[in-house]
Image 1 (cartoon, rainbow, N blue to C red):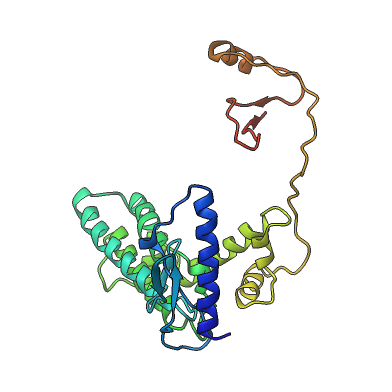
Image 2 (image 1 turned 135 degrees about the vertical axis):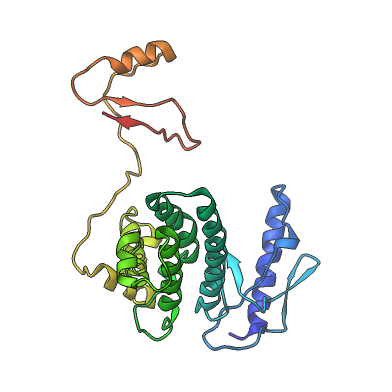
Length: 278
């Protein structure tokens, strides 16, 4: 399918969406409408436009930001990594000045670095990390390691000539490669913990590059536990107590045999209610 067919299909889909929106009292913000075309080979952005109402939308020439991830035309995520590294460096510069002025303890410095610098620089790394010395990510772990070394010096106050092994041990900050592997492993575990039938759960073990990487990160090829959600909830044969706040506190402190559930009474539109089990 060439870019002309893609633009024509997107224009038709946009017309159908506008028609549906008009019938339901919904309006689209044309200023925030973007068009992105992803392809295997590196090519220039197509000249065709997508017609959305009376507005022609050109395909993005640069990477498109979606949910904090910068998506380039080849989905290599190189621009995402570069952007996140710049943001992490800026956060590192600001925090280093604050730490010198405020005199925080090393333990608190490490917590701040983990929350404000590493979370920014490594955001989305689960998608682009392929492993150490693997084509496509060579050099990216070294860039992150330089940033981790700066964090360690700011945390401990050591000189630039301090041995890196001792610096890492004293600061409590793990190596960049280790952190990248752990983040990918936790990402795979989160996907496997999703309920059965969730499409995201099928990413682990799929015959795709990221599916194979997550499988290797987990190093597990056997069966996994599954979470099954009941389509129709079964009635609970229990005694219901509904009291105002003063009496509810007294009832909560009273000991009862068996299973006790507490809820604040909040209920979602679909009827689901949050509760605590004792």
